[in-house]
Image 1 (spheres, helix red, strand yellow):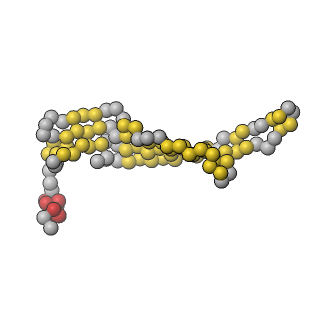
Image 2: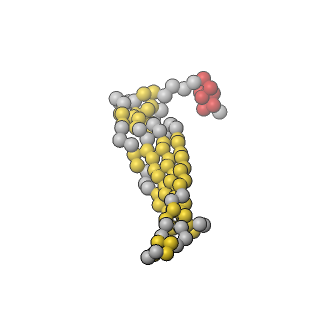
Image 3: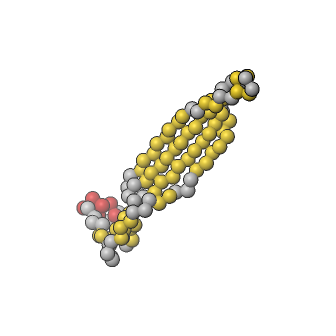
Length: 106
């Protein structure tokens, strides 16, 4: 289970100016879109207990377009962030509130 999810998209428009000999060709304007997703703390839950917590993971996508034509569309795999804490067995008990006890007994 992940606690917190954050995403952002950044779009830039790089321009390529081409000159052949002394002739200046029309500029080529591209659209480069970078999308990143970050998922915060990842909890490991087993038998109603929190067994451990990790720093989450993230992935990035990239799209390069010229006008309406997509030239490149790439996505990374989800990459786990390195921090992790494992709690001493059997883990931390997840307490049930009176409200969740009522919901679970239906």
